[in-house]
Structures are given as C-alpha cells and as structure tokens.
Image 1: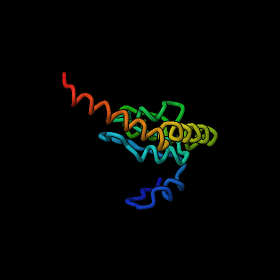
Image 2 (image 1 turned 180 degrees about the vertical axis):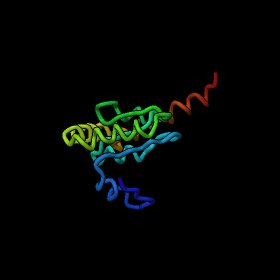
Image 3 (image 1 turned 135 degrees about the vertical axis):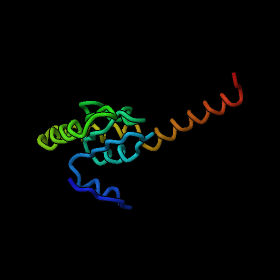
Image 4 (image 1 turned 180 degrees about the horizontal axis):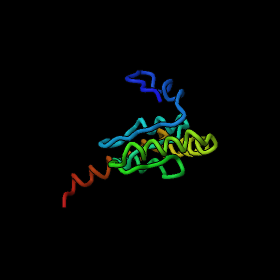
Length: 126
C-alpha cells in the first residue's frame, strides 16, 4: 500500500495500481472511480453517491456499506491482491462499463436529456 498524495497525472498513478480502493463516506459522483475503471482497475468502494451505479458488486469490483470497518475493506483488497485472474476480469469488465456508459457521445446525450427535462419542468411547473 502506497499513499500517493496529490498529483496532476492521475493516469500515471493509476497505472501503478493493482486495485483501486475508494472508501469514501460522502462523495456524490466520484469521477476518480470512473478514471480507475477506465484504466482497467477493479474497485473496492463504499455504496455512497453514484458509485454503486457504476461499480457492479462482484463484477467490476466490491462494494461496502459506508459504515463498514477497516477489516472489511482490507479483506476485500486482500481477495483481489491474491487473485490476479479475478483482478483482470473485474478490471476488464469495469473498462467496458466506462466505455459503454461514459463515452463522450453517450455522456453528451445523457446531459442533453437531463438539461431538457429540467428546462421543461421549469417552463411548466406543476
């Protein structure tokens, strides 16, 4: 385990990792999780914010309750550390999720639809 601190080169740091652990207790989106998945890393994270909408339990990584203890987090990291084939499968599945759901055309379409829905609701309040 290495604590990397702040960096401007996220891809370089992620490329050095085998597993991405993100035990947040208060994140809304967690774009760094998507960056890690795009780099082919399995993710161990908490079920906070939008993280569970991208990290599929047992498929792209492992999810913990936000109140889970350090032992639970360490245990899941250890499972991945000990099983290179599982890390590879989960990492590849995570990369595929990001490519399918977060590619710029798809992201742009989703934001445009959200914007239109908000504009319509504002124009015609109930």
